[in-house]
Length: 158
Image (cartoon, rainbow, N blue to C red; front, side):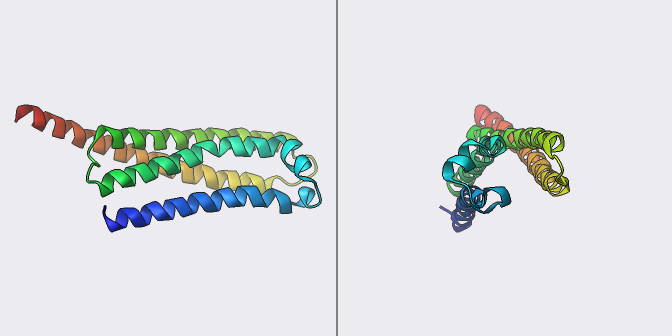
């Protein structure tokens, strides 16, 4: 396996571990939950449950990225399975955009006397990153699909 693929797979795994640790640690120090019990933190906050559900596409995309790098390390990047993994990454990014948009609507409707600017800005940042990832995955998917089709046509003529 190529060293660069292993390195990037390790980086992606560390990003996933860091994101999971942050998701589990942050609710305990957040303002209104600082002195709450575990039950109050995890079962009385519908937005936190929504955030955990919305994180599923993120972790799915990380897993698919590790798979694509594995195909690269095995010199199987020009395969239909690599194209499928890139397509899954694209759909995960699009679903993250949808989850963030719904979360932003929830924040705007339920912010009460708080200023929602911080939450809205975080949503904009996540949406921008997801748009970049979805666009890149779509371009790589299209180009890789063309290469796989060319390879398949060449295999048929030989």
